[in-house]
Image 1 (tube, rainbow, N blue to C red):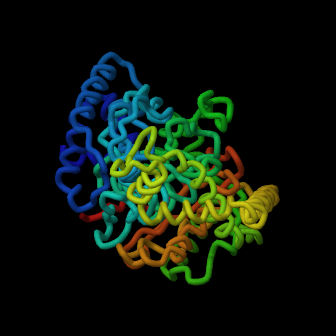
Image 2 (image 1 turned 180 degrees about the vertical axis):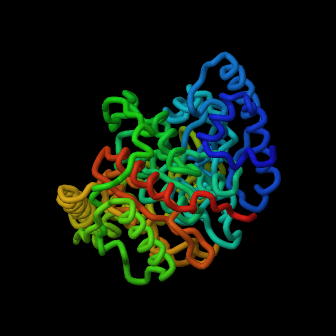
Image 3 (image 1 turned 120 degrees about the horizontal axis):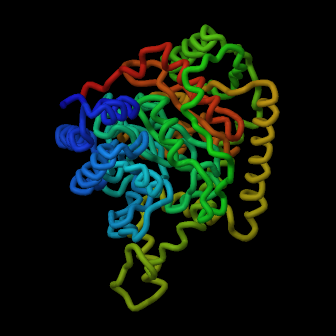
Length: 485
């Protein structure tokens, strides 16, 4: 039973439905693995073993009755930015340290409807602001491939839990690369769906026009299976898109002969790690060998994406986080009779330095006299970036890029250099700015650390991205690599 925690969703489902294992056994295997390695990885903020075993027992009853779906009885970690009824949802912030929601996020609700088993809540950068999982108010998460390195962020716990064998899959969120970059750093698969495909209801808001929930899995098929469960229209989310239901696993296994792939030179940035560059070049050659045609493409406005993102995202964060004023919920500074001092101290002590930095940047960009110069200009640049993608997708079906120009860096290496930290997201940010789907799949190693290849497609082209990544995955051995903790 020791190896059950390393099963993919498909393998676990097959064994569960064949009655070779029970969900309780599978869940206990994950809990045992958590007991063995969590003190070193620290991918969780809260563990819910009693809930997990109760859900597993219920899943076994469903399976025995011939009921359930592909995710029934399979253990998952939920990023601590999604509301979970009766379980603390802290966003890794002192501000929400004691917040216990009375409802579930829609994505969590949909997993529960399938009979999922929740192991606990995943660590993250505070309010999803960061690229390393070091901005958590409680503790950093460590990369299972090298415990002295970061797992990426902000969904660092989500990627590390899967890479360490603590969870079969996880649910993260992606505002500027927060699912894809940690997936790349930890050698697992991460999918950021098209904006509006997955409901944001119950996802604690950071930047509302950029945030999207997405899965992290051991294989491409795992991510496709989870997307099947969580995609769909939700009337409680005004940005949710109504589209016909799609089975994202249906085209997995089909060949990619004739698929047109574009390689944008702008994503191979100056300072890119040589080992990462070689891994991506080799991956592109593999895709060509599988029948895809590859051509260079140009996205000239990409160079404005980083600046554009770090005006829009902080501006929206400044507005969204204004609600944490010490009055309605969350941390509240009480040691004063002055209302304004109470609000000031609540925010001073409740928010960490990165969140404070972004609130200040956003408030400045939105302030009188600067709105037109910064926020409005960033929105105009956003339109140009989106038009660039639209133009390129008339000639190609998808783009192939690095997920990150570097592999996982050392803990503490960039904490005092936020600009350098922001630059690690240069390949992922444009996807969120344009609302496109993006997927990171392992494609090799550089100095012993995983490298991720990113596939980007037009709106609602998840099927194409998943099919392409699945073909690549099947032709390579990277999905079988395990971190030796």
